[in-house]
Image (cartoon, rainbow, N blue to C red; front, side, top):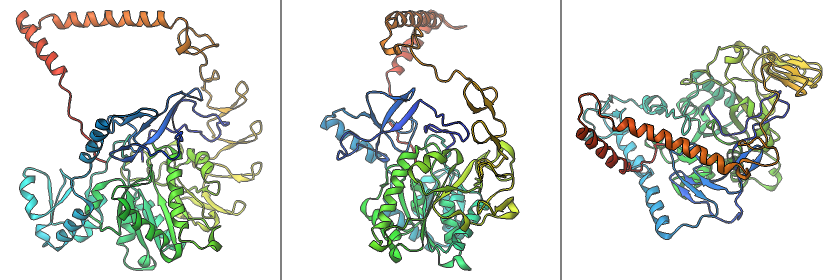
Length: 514
């Protein structure tokens, strides 16, 4: 999960107002054209949106990394590349892949579990299981000895979470939420769980060897290649959920297909916990491809059936998710995480976790724990949080964030308790909100009949900005030319020449660990 987001967010009770600037996914001009590849698989086509309008030129960028520092792929949609550049890109993509293949990881794992307990070691510095011949290359590293089989079954507790919010944002389910999900899946009668980006749930299902969940099995799809060293091919596939890319090719794709279509597709559910920073549209497109894969094993008589799904995401994405999956509803259950400072159980008011479960399973079949503050609403026929009161005017339990919402008769709906009705905007909002709305027109002269790019004063503005930059640079150079205390003019000149030489040395490209 990631906290920041590129997705234009529509908060409930905001009267349909959405962010009007940002980056959105776009459909290619030629549907048959293949997207260029980066180290994380096929790229996505994006378009910049400003004031609700798309810019003219679209571009390809990495589907998994939102920060160009993590994956610097960029290509205009209409850009033509030479054979040399294409070859260099392919070689770079290969260099960025993990050093060991999937087959090599499995072979090492089988050897590792056969070692005596005293020889089983894990390098925390390199995040790698070590065989006896590997020890020489890890001198001085932080090693963890006597790795038990139980520890091998909980790799998320051995591995450091990848907490780069703009790339991985690997926040892991707390035991409370993970146990609730596992128990709920068992009560609902599911026998197979496709875990897309939910490693903790995958571990818990595999750890359970007794009771009703003994017959449940799971398959983990995750972009973190480090899990490859802990699982066989039928338990883990390295996968990018933003572009439906299996890193190990057709073999991994067939593992997923067989898992979904086993028993003619009966008794399987998909549970996914995507990074919050991801756009909803690419995720929805990927999930529809997994649904289509599941439907391939269905008979024509079952064509009306849907693949059961638990999509775990913040509540303020409800409208976007339901736009792509109209049959989904949002449960009141608050999902919390171990290594997130805010998304914790027990907090109240605005500090509660905003993460919810979206599902196409009827909510009256899902029982939420009363000991954690949930109650059953006989009018709505579903479990809701304790403070989520039924509104007789809306005929629904309307709260989304766990607090009691108030009904606004002017807006004809319930809104957050901190909001009031604004007669200027004609909808409810925070008391200190701005009624002006987004600024229109030109940012240079303020004219409403044109944009900045077409401003007749743009040349004057550019000259003024250029002159200011030059003056600032001259002042900076003057300061640099003056020798520091105890330094002669010749020494200062030598220092400047040395710095200018270093400025032309570019650092080597390095692909981020995903």
